[in-house]
Image (cartoon, rainbow, N blue to C red):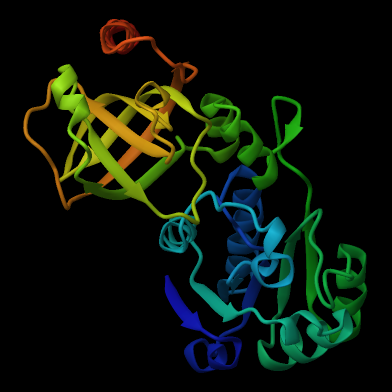
Length: 309
């Protein structure tokens, strides 16, 4: 997949007919993948290319920073998943307040048809566009008829009776319901970050941990202890991961601490990916280090039993 930085440069990169999917695609979940698959299929039918238009930063980060949600994945991972879905071009365009003020009609006529010269557009059922989101999917279909490009609207993808959506996935993650989130994502939720030195307390307790520093823009699951799978240095290991403030030791900052099962040594400075498979328990405060060690031992034993089955 080729990444094009800016709408105005796209037609220099792609001179063939193309079908464009519109959306933020945070998480590239099952609902998104239905849109992407329809885009790829439509492009193949026309003998053209498939493309997506993504804005950076996230529109809410510009228009309403107080409501800006933590992202499900980084932009780098979004690009990787879009490429895996078969998209040929990703147009990454800088979002500004000036761009947000463009009317739906101008967006359709001057940008979609004028600058991008789309032959078709694919959007989700709840897509909005133009002038602070004032344009609807029905408006897009009407403009498509005027500008002579097709518009396909994709119905929601239901998972366990609910539409797969980024907002719902965030809610599930914050509740620690990582298995349900994975069903909507179509993959296990993960955090990616660098292993950094901690305070060494885990090692003193007999459970040395890898402290993962991930992007502050990417969401963390709700505080608690999880069964995880860690990917580092080309290898994968099961682990038990604590996400929280370590209340037993009066720590206030949120930390992601991974105890890798049956692994010796450290991975300082290396990139580590933590997949969250299931929640073991909520975060607790213990009266003593001895009680904490007993609980961690139980957590590890439970994790091993789950892995074995």
